[in-house]
Image (cartoon, rainbow, N blue to C red; front, side):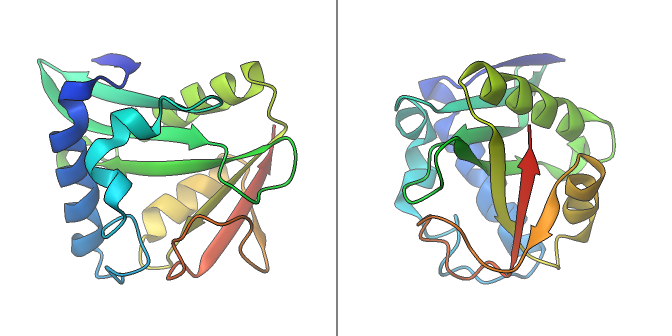
Length: 158
């Protein structure tokens, strides 16, 4: 298993994992990463300052990824945990936990004090992992992600 930063050649596979994950859990397509045009070019999205995207790969096959981004409108010192998706065969093996931990460490290095995320109750396994990793619920969305269909908002102090 290799954990590395995103490369341009990863775009297509990561977009497939993200979109199929959203479809699998039956959450809205509009107002999510499914219809967000940046999903097709994550490499460029995560080249902006204060952003990073970690990819999990085994034997040349990308299994998923997780990133942080300074989403517009977030409070000072806060970034968003974004595009955290794993292929079905990668789930339940600790890969997601490791990717998130990498994001936490990178966020601290970049000077962030909090991480925010948006998700859905249908993604209950992920929500449980977020709780286990120290995220807590907040009553409303922060920032301007454009993902207006999400119904769970969480925050983690780093």
